[in-house]
Length: 150
Image (cartoon, rainbow, N blue to C red):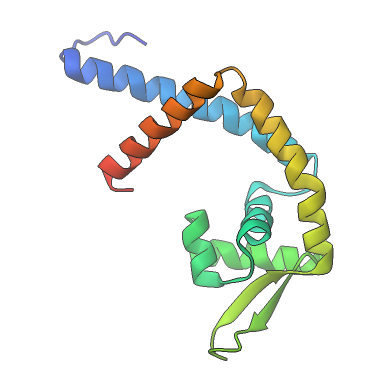
Protein backbone atom coordinates (compact mmCIF):
# COMPACT_ATOMS: atom_id res chain seq x y z
CA UNK A 1 0.00 0.00 0.00
CA UNK A 2 1.41 3.36 -1.00
CA UNK A 3 0.25 6.07 1.41
CA UNK A 4 -1.23 9.25 0.00
CA UNK A 5 0.92 11.16 2.43
CA UNK A 6 4.69 10.74 2.36
CA UNK A 7 5.88 10.08 5.91
CA UNK A 8 9.48 9.70 4.87
CA UNK A 9 11.24 6.72 3.33
CA UNK A 10 11.85 4.92 6.65
CA UNK A 11 8.29 5.35 7.93
CA UNK A 12 6.73 4.48 4.56
CA UNK A 13 8.77 1.24 4.43
CA UNK A 14 7.79 0.34 8.01
CA UNK A 15 4.11 1.00 7.31
CA UNK A 16 4.19 -1.02 4.09
CA UNK A 17 5.90 -3.93 5.85
CA UNK A 18 3.40 -3.79 8.72
CA UNK A 19 0.44 -3.91 6.31
CA UNK A 20 1.92 -6.93 4.48
CA UNK A 21 2.58 -8.72 7.78
CA UNK A 22 -0.93 -7.98 9.07
CA UNK A 23 -2.57 -9.14 5.83
CA UNK A 24 -0.49 -12.33 5.68
CA UNK A 25 -1.34 -13.10 9.32
CA UNK A 26 -5.02 -12.42 8.71
CA UNK A 27 -5.11 -14.74 5.69
CA UNK A 28 -3.24 -17.55 7.45
CA UNK A 29 -5.28 -17.16 10.63
CA UNK A 30 -8.57 -17.25 8.70
CA UNK A 31 -7.64 -20.52 6.98
CA UNK A 32 -6.32 -22.01 10.23
CA UNK A 33 -9.54 -21.07 12.02
CA UNK A 34 -11.64 -22.73 9.32
CA UNK A 35 -9.61 -25.91 9.80
CA UNK A 36 -9.95 -25.76 13.60
CA UNK A 37 -13.72 -25.26 13.37
CA UNK A 38 -13.93 -28.43 11.29
CA UNK A 39 -12.85 -30.26 14.47
CA UNK A 40 -15.80 -28.73 16.36
CA UNK A 41 -13.58 -26.47 18.48
CA UNK A 42 -13.03 -22.77 18.91
CA UNK A 43 -9.54 -21.36 18.39
CA UNK A 44 -8.94 -20.88 22.15
CA UNK A 45 -10.18 -24.43 22.88
CA UNK A 46 -7.85 -25.82 20.23
CA UNK A 47 -5.00 -23.75 21.70
CA UNK A 48 -5.54 -25.25 25.15
CA UNK A 49 -5.66 -28.79 23.78
CA UNK A 50 -2.55 -28.13 21.69
CA UNK A 51 -0.60 -26.64 24.61
CA UNK A 52 -1.52 -29.45 27.00
CA UNK A 53 -0.93 -32.08 24.32
CA UNK A 54 2.57 -30.83 23.60
CA UNK A 55 3.67 -29.55 27.01
CA UNK A 56 1.67 -31.68 29.44
CA UNK A 57 -0.31 -30.62 32.51
CA UNK A 58 0.24 -27.07 33.76
CA UNK A 59 -1.12 -24.49 36.16
CA UNK A 60 -3.74 -22.10 34.83
CA UNK A 61 -1.38 -19.10 35.07
CA UNK A 62 1.27 -20.86 33.00
CA UNK A 63 -1.32 -21.86 30.43
CA UNK A 64 -2.56 -18.26 30.21
CA UNK A 65 0.99 -17.01 29.68
CA UNK A 66 1.66 -19.60 26.97
CA UNK A 67 -1.52 -18.60 25.14
CA UNK A 68 -1.19 -14.84 25.78
CA UNK A 69 -4.66 -14.56 27.33
CA UNK A 70 -6.10 -13.32 30.63
CA UNK A 71 -7.36 -15.60 33.37
CA UNK A 72 -10.96 -14.42 32.94
CA UNK A 73 -11.06 -15.47 29.31
CA UNK A 74 -9.33 -18.75 30.10
CA UNK A 75 -11.87 -19.72 32.78
CA UNK A 76 -14.72 -19.83 30.27
CA UNK A 77 -12.65 -21.80 27.75
CA UNK A 78 -11.65 -24.31 30.44
CA UNK A 79 -15.23 -24.60 31.71
CA UNK A 80 -16.42 -25.50 28.21
CA UNK A 81 -13.59 -27.99 27.61
CA UNK A 82 -14.33 -29.58 30.98
CA UNK A 83 -18.04 -29.91 30.05
CA UNK A 84 -16.93 -31.69 26.86
CA UNK A 85 -14.83 -34.08 28.96
CA UNK A 86 -11.59 -33.01 27.28
CA UNK A 87 -9.74 -31.50 30.25
CA UNK A 88 -9.83 -31.77 34.01
CA UNK A 89 -8.75 -29.54 36.85
CA UNK A 90 -6.77 -31.25 39.60
CA UNK A 91 -5.13 -29.92 42.74
CA UNK A 92 -1.35 -29.82 42.49
CA UNK A 93 0.40 -32.45 44.59
CA UNK A 94 3.13 -29.93 45.42
CA UNK A 95 0.80 -27.06 46.32
CA UNK A 96 -2.83 -27.95 47.07
CA UNK A 97 -3.84 -24.31 46.52
CA UNK A 98 -2.74 -24.52 42.88
CA UNK A 99 -4.97 -25.97 40.17
CA UNK A 100 -3.35 -27.95 37.37
CA UNK A 101 -5.08 -28.39 34.01
CA UNK A 102 -4.57 -31.66 32.18
CA UNK A 103 -6.08 -33.52 29.27
CA UNK A 104 -8.42 -36.38 30.02
CA UNK A 105 -8.02 -39.62 28.08
CA UNK A 106 -10.71 -38.31 25.72
CA UNK A 107 -8.82 -35.00 25.36
CA UNK A 108 -5.52 -36.74 24.71
CA UNK A 109 -7.15 -38.97 22.14
CA UNK A 110 -8.64 -35.91 20.41
CA UNK A 111 -5.26 -34.14 20.45
CA UNK A 112 -3.55 -37.13 18.83
CA UNK A 113 -6.33 -37.42 16.26
CA UNK A 114 -6.58 -33.79 15.17
CA UNK A 115 -3.22 -32.13 15.69
CA UNK A 116 -1.28 -34.09 13.07
CA UNK A 117 -4.03 -33.22 10.54
CA UNK A 118 -3.80 -29.55 11.49
CA UNK A 119 -0.01 -29.64 11.23
CA UNK A 120 -0.25 -31.00 7.68
CA UNK A 121 -2.82 -28.32 6.82
CA UNK A 122 -0.57 -25.52 8.12
CA UNK A 123 2.38 -27.06 6.31
CA UNK A 124 0.43 -26.90 3.06
CA UNK A 125 -0.45 -23.25 3.65
CA UNK A 126 3.14 -22.37 4.50
CA UNK A 127 4.30 -24.33 1.46
CA UNK A 128 3.97 -21.10 -0.53
CA UNK A 129 7.40 -20.43 0.96
CA UNK A 130 10.18 -22.95 0.51
CA UNK A 131 12.05 -24.35 3.53
CA UNK A 132 14.80 -21.74 3.40
CA UNK A 133 12.25 -18.91 3.17
CA UNK A 134 10.26 -20.31 6.11
CA UNK A 135 13.40 -20.48 8.25
CA UNK A 136 14.41 -16.95 7.30
CA UNK A 137 10.92 -15.61 7.98
CA UNK A 138 10.94 -17.38 11.34
CA UNK A 139 14.26 -15.74 12.26
CA UNK A 140 13.05 -12.32 11.17
CA UNK A 141 9.77 -12.59 13.07
CA UNK A 142 11.60 -13.74 16.21
CA UNK A 143 14.00 -10.79 15.87
CA UNK A 144 11.08 -8.40 15.44
CA UNK A 145 9.21 -9.79 18.44
CA UNK A 146 12.27 -9.70 20.69
CA UNK A 147 13.22 -6.23 19.47
CA UNK A 148 9.79 -4.89 20.32
CA UNK A 149 9.89 -6.60 23.69
CA UNK A 150 6.79 -8.73 23.28
